[in-house]
Length: 488
Image (cartoon, rainbow, N blue to C red; front, side):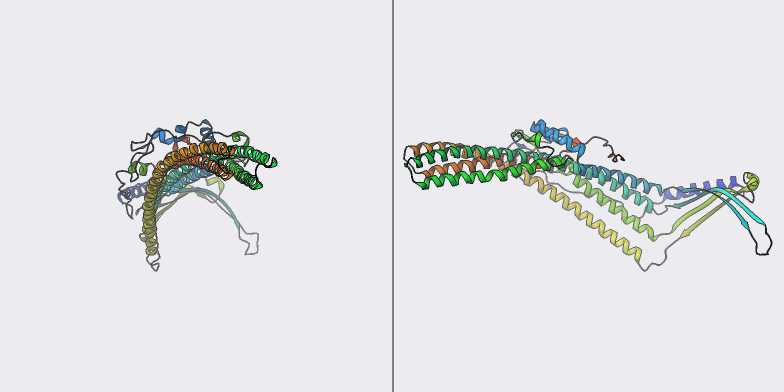
């Protein structure tokens, strides 16, 4: 057969293989996404500005803008640009995309090019012998026809893994934006608590000075002086812990922004108020949240990948069909190698292999992969329940903390009045100094709790936005790959 005829035969076999491939459905189960019935409405009572209206996608994707804090917005933008965990998630997406390409390549033939020149001399007879020459050049091709769909199922699994990696990237982004905002709120809360403690310390220093003057004048006994002193030092003892909290929050923010600890100290050293939540927050319905949350999407795509892998395992039960071939030139000297009429050569070798006995290893691998599929189905169901729980807890927590904050506001107002009255009554000699101390301690306690509660209200809202699946809007549509460090 001439090379042209051989080529036609090879193309015919290739076409027949493709026709056979398209006619056969892949083995293994076809994936059907699990049908999850979400509650019609949230169990928690919507109060404190919460409402069941559908959340606008744009507002939810960049929820931090509703807090109207330019510093926070700037910090989140920097974190998205420089956070190392986010860059790792981007790299995993690129890796999954490349692995899908590797699986897709399995559908097509592989072709190798090669050339050989061989010189051989036989001196067994004792004389100088003769030199034999052999030259060849050509292409070798191999192709495993995916008759039963093992390769197609592996591509399906790789595609699902890619989509799971993309969902994981969005999950990391949502967690990052929330983490930056939570640490920023924590920083401002510590700074406000520190200011409160320092203001109370100054007030108590004045009281201590007044009591000491009266003691030195012999108007009061030493007990009142020592009581004023321990009250003063007790307040002073709170300040180092609050300063440590400020530094820890600054350091954590710096790391989230991909910077060394301490880099943000100068920029954020000046105290500022905790961002105030908007008066109204739309939370939508549970079904909307389940569709938005990337962790649920990731769990569903992982389930799809493991389902496809059952088909990959089942394909090993069936025969494998391969087609090998080569076409090229062969000659006994270099001058005749390019003479196509005499040097042309080709070969076609179809083959079939079938593992007829393996002591049940293949079936056990199928059973094992089916169990993995079941595990990921349960993981998906657990992710749905965990998402609903997270939202419900934060709905309740946000509303109840606002009620707590209102009570603390009233308590602080009353404590301020009581502290002033106690000072006046003590100077007038109508009450003893214990009442003054009690009023000062109560004022510091209530003001500190109020500062904490103001931070918790905003933190609860941030956690609620995260639970609702918000925060994906900070990521560029096509994030660039990380640059390799320059060589020195």
